[in-house]
Image (cartoon, rainbow, N blue to C red; front, side, top):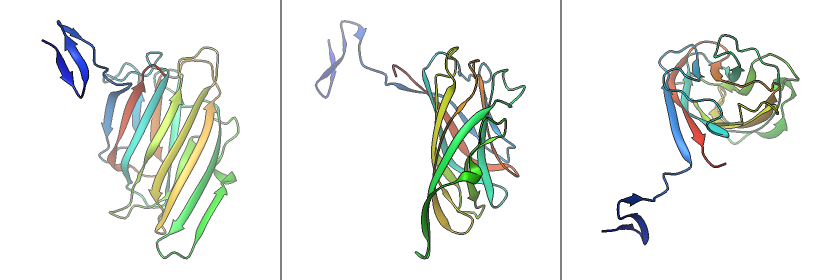
Amino acid sequence: MAVVSNGTTMADAGAFSASLGSMVLIKTLTASSSADLSFVHGGSSVVLDGTYPIYLFKFINLHPATDNVQFRHNASTDAGSNYNLNKTSTMFEGEHDEGDTSDTCNYVTGHDIANSTAVAKITYNIGNDNDQSISGEMWLFNPSSATYVKHFMTVVSNTHNGNYEKNTHTAGYYNTTSDIDAMQFTFSSGNIDSGQIKLYGIKDS
């Protein structure tokens, strides 16, 4: 007997044919006064290798313990022993305050980097009021390529410590043809008080 859902045959004669989706949840890390949240291939069921051509990190209400901080990322090719890869990035942002008195959209030269081992910034001026946090996502492309540098893009929304909405976009690349097998996320000062980062693999992309 066939199993049909919304006109689609999902199982027939013992064969299961429904698509399980292209986005696969790999790992969820939950912060609790954490110095960092790090995803290391092969540790704690983390997959970060050639299994998927694209990896997606989702940032969900990350709350800093310290006021007026940056949110940042770095990568490793030696399973997290060193997070010191050269990278180049670009950043632009839009801002609007609660009082409707200020709005901007601009390229942020002070927060980009040029082939440097410095930690890459995702956004900055994050407030630590009880209701302030950052949410968004980061895409990492083909981290196991032996041919190409490793491109990334981020887009986030955060509450500025001066009660602004800040929407920040970054893009760049890790300047290595070695396998990236670990990613680390930190605030520039203090701990990640709470929140989650989810890692997904994107199939058939």
